[in-house]
Image (cartoon, rainbow, N blue to C red; front, top):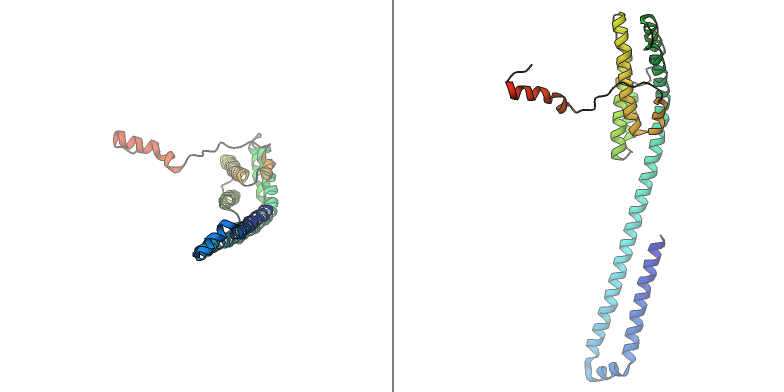
Length: 241
């Protein structure tokens, strides 16, 4: 705003200075002599062109200032809306993250023990599981995310994907065998580790709730990188094994 005022003051000063120069010049002896010789029309045309140019420049500057002010106001409104949306999403995610912390605490304890405690850990996780991540909830979160910037919106999509992975792993059925229970807990820890990675990009502060837990090794390679060995084998031997 201050820069706008300074620019307007500068333009007004230039405009007034030009008028003074024209008026003073018109009253000088040299200009008067020219006028007496019949060149007053040229002089008036010259004066008019100067004043007209200044008026045009002033109008252009005023329009530019108005456009910049509109852009700044629009940007400020969008930023405030994005900040408010981000806080709402944080509020929605927080209780879900706290439940994930509880699941991870159970896994952390059970993973160090024998089959019986592992089975108890699985039973406990299933019993405290709260399915607050329905499809309607995911849809609402995605709608909220539309008010975020493109980067945060992409990060939120990843967070929701991670939550879906955790939910689906908790609900998966197994035959109750010791080996199945072991892999149930191991896979759940892997899904939680994925979620931790996604959340750390979206909200690093909230993700600190998982700092003390053992993470599963995550392979971040893209699908193309995963299948490269198969492609190389085929190129070299023509086989698929």
